[in-house]
Length: 103
Length: 170
Image (cartoon, rainbow over all chains, first blue to last red; front, top):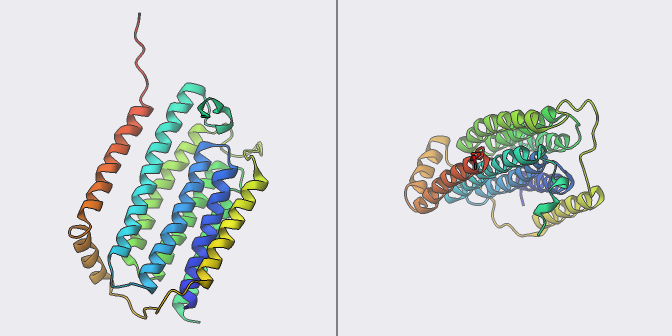
């Protein structure tokens, strides 16, 4: 296995781990979204590394990265929409105060 | 050590370090800027891996996305400057364990899986863009169009959720 691929996959794993920590530990909605962004960034690094080092002549590999970028944009749009609605209703985006959303 | 290996390692380390800084600083603006630097380092890493189009796209997209995020942080936070060193975390031990276990699990998979033969060369930047364009407007067109429609739907949904409700007089 090449060192370059291992470096890229380790970076992806580290970003994924940091993102998981952020998404689970933060109480603020915008900070939770930052954690999710890091998780998706970890997935993107892996996809680019797989494309470059395993299948560089298959453009579908790059297309998957575009799909992940789309997911990132959608997450931002919907997340901020919810944040605005929440802030307008309760004056805060602290998720510990949102117990009424619990199922 | 090749130049490619050095730059992948360097930008990878920078991306992870700034990712950690996002959750270590009390200032929300610094958090947003750290995330911007992390994503930019990732874009530079893509460039090191010869994915020129994706690298430039990543840097451009994240620069705008994180600027918007910084504005929202200042709008919504009680202490955006972090001067009060307010604690904004919960279940820290569980989160640390979950993050650590995910990291170790993913690294073990990366090390022990047989990934097959490694490709020495990649198409040049111009050829990559041509190939990606043909892929998006050919075989993957349905997925590409679905992504576009989904973004449009998300934009309408986000605006509908965020819009101020009209107060009707009874």
